[in-house]
Amino acid sequence: MSQKNTWKNWAETTICYPSEIIYPESEEEIVQIIERAKKEQKKIRVVGNGHSFTQLVATNSILISLDKWEGIIEIDDNLVTVRSGTNIKNLGELLFQYGLAQENLGDIDVQSIAGAISTGTHGTGIHFGNLATQIEEITFINAQGEKITCSENQEQDIFKAAQVSLGSLGIITRLKLRCVPKYKLELKNVKGNFSDCMKQLENYKKENRNFEFYYFPYTEVVQMKFSNTTEKEVKEGGVMKFLNDIILENGAFKLVSEISRVFPSQSRRVSRLCGSLVGESERCAWSHKVFATARLVRFTEMEYNIPMEHFSDCIHEIKKKIEDTQYDLHFPIENRFVKKDDIWLSPAYERDSAYIAVHMYKGMPYKKYLKDMETIFEKYQGRPHWGKLHFQTPEKLKNSYPMWEQFHNIRKKMDPNGLFMNLYLASIFGE
Image 1 (cartoon, rainbow, N blue to C red):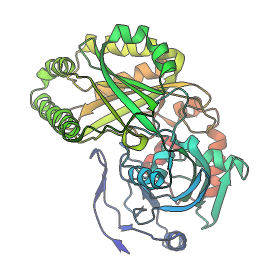
Image 2 (cartoon, helix red, strand yellow; image 1 turned 135 degrees about the vertical axis):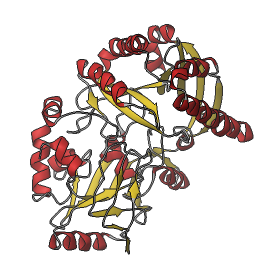
Image 3 (cartoon, rainbow, N blue to C red; image 1 turned 180 degrees about the horizontal axis):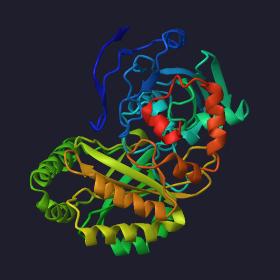
């Protein structure tokens, strides 16, 4: 079933007008769509839930949504095969019914599982890689309509390319996830001082399962988040949690963000106000209900991966640049930490990493701020998160990724005529 439509992403930084949007319900239907697209000389892009900030899926040709291709296919001990369109929130509930969970998650759970791994989505915790490291096996349909199944033990080179592929090798249909027994997490939100946080950073990272912090520009305030496994009883927070998460954190922040948009000169004052209002809280819940945070305030975002050892110098330089330049800025800066991996296009390839994310409220000018931040990230060997805004050239990306050429050799074998390419991919791949 197909329909004509206008499509835009969550942040509304991308809008496109595909000739048709198709919702396949089987792998056989996906193969038929590929064969028809080749015959009609059309391009194909696949969309999850639109949480990439780039032009990654933009097309004026065929857009495929896998919203109707979701759910668990098979469970074999701790290995769970899922349909690629399954969103992470639903997957958490499904796994929980079988006493299982994903070992780590990011702070948003509305993405499709295939979209999340394909862009290198990650959480935080120095003992955990990004979500793609949880994948034991990938099945996708390439541009020839062939079903390719790959893993560490089967077509390993294809697997290393497919784990983070930006949807350029084909249409992922199945993922075999390595899961763990379900577990509870105790989350503590703690207000702190930037300098103190930096002095204790190594301890915080080592002594907690998951650690991250937000720095509030034009202040010395940080909000630190500590998550650790626990056997305590579940304590969700009920009405008070709803009031805090939805009304206070999102509702009040939406209001002050609108003030910043209408009166940009007040942004620094708004940031100081937000820093002064940072509170402390605790909650205990099953893991899949702890990681994610509601995102009701829309923004644009850039996030960069840098080697862990450069984090302190980098974040101090960012802080100084913001204070010296006095941007119209009130969004806090998010800092997370991830274990290295061996995935060819993973930003964490062969290096323990820190991720630094900078945001600007929707409707406010962002390019100068993001470009200035990118200049700093580049100084510290930064690699962009594939789902976030960046201004990298193919030459710079090639120099950042040791396996760049090997990835593209696989890509050209899987899609020799560029069936899955769009203008954005062509611009960053140098096609």
